[in-house]
Amino acid sequence: MEDIKAYIESGILELYVLGDVTPDEKLQVEAMALKHPAIKAELDEIERSMELYAGKNAVEPAEHLRGRILNSLLTNFADDSTFDEVIEEPKNNVVAFTAPKATNFYKYAFAACLALLLASVVALVSMYNKLQDSNSTIAALQTDKQHFANTVSLKEGELEVLQDASFKFLKLQATTKAPTGSQITVAWSPARKKVWIDMKSLKMPENDKEHQYQLWALVAGKPVDLGVFDANADTADMKPMKSIASADAFAVTLEPKGGSPTPTMGEMMVIGKF
Amino acid sequence: MSKKRKISLSEEELVLALRNHEKIAIEALYDMYSASLFGVISRIVVDTATAEDLLQETFVKIWHSFSGYSTEKGRLFTWMVNIARNLAIDKLRSKDFKNQNKNQELENNVTFIDEQRNTVYKPELLGIKELVETLKPEQKLILDLVYFKGYTHVEAADELGIPLGTIKTRLRMAIQQLRKHFN
Image (cartoon, rainbow over the protein chains, first blue to last red):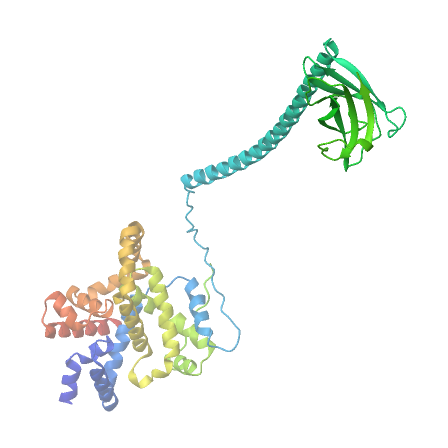
């Protein structure tokens, strides 16, 4: 009994209850308690006291915990019964962040830049189209202008022929080869050495594509080439031909396209002599 | 909020019901012991949310390892309070809890201090006052260090600069006083 009393008084039982013993000591205390009812009784007393002491120090946990904890334990159960969980008002812990202003500024600036870029591209395309229109208009006007300049210079040439007294007009009359009534009027100025054909008064059968009319001057019995021309309905101008200083007569032959070095006498259409 | 009626069983009935995995046993267990266990846990871990998590962990562990308890080893509460205390101390010494505490100090100082003050003024703790007359201050100090703060008696001796033998004696005397008081 002395041993047991000493064991009890050593304080090991208190440490055991307080959970402050090594695993070996723990086993030893449990073995002693089994063997000696007195130790068991002492332990029980200590435990009871500490339990009551803990009860005095108890802190009631929040009510919502009961449901939460019981439900977490009940997940082991096969049945689906649950405990009422006391629902606590969720605290509003959402912190509102003020949107950073710089970010918005750059966002809008970027959007504005994009819009501006788009507008610029549209404007550029439309301007380019207008420019193209203008360019083609200018080209057309230049062609027109050129055309008018040509016409004017041609008319001046015609006017010159008509006003110049040195020009002689000669009607070349049809040969047997040409249809009756065929004629060409040739204007010639020996002083200026210039020869014109009046296409307006030209009455000749139309030449085909392989052939052209060729004008010849007869100088001392020899034919001299004065150039080729086409007899088309739409030519109504004075056509300048090659120069010649003196001529006895003028004749037109039908020659292969581009003209011949010597006239094909068999194809002489019209002829006129001074 | 209407408080649910609390279920109370004798310890023998409770142990038997727990062994049979009866649903009512869990409720009874919680109603009978949650406050005492929470008292111990919230002494060790001041932060309420952490203490609540620990209380849940404690009950889960009690429930899962109940087969490891036998009446021969002692009272049910002694077994349970050891589980609660060990979990709380492990948490207190764990790395992430230490970090969490640092963070609290830096970011949420006011709340942290408020929580500490709240713990001191919890009306549930007022019952201790009657014990002050029962226990001598040096007895209560050592008892609380070991029981509530998770010190071993060796650590308590170091902390207080008192010989180990004296610590043991004072612990024993304190508990003797409690026994007298409660009887």
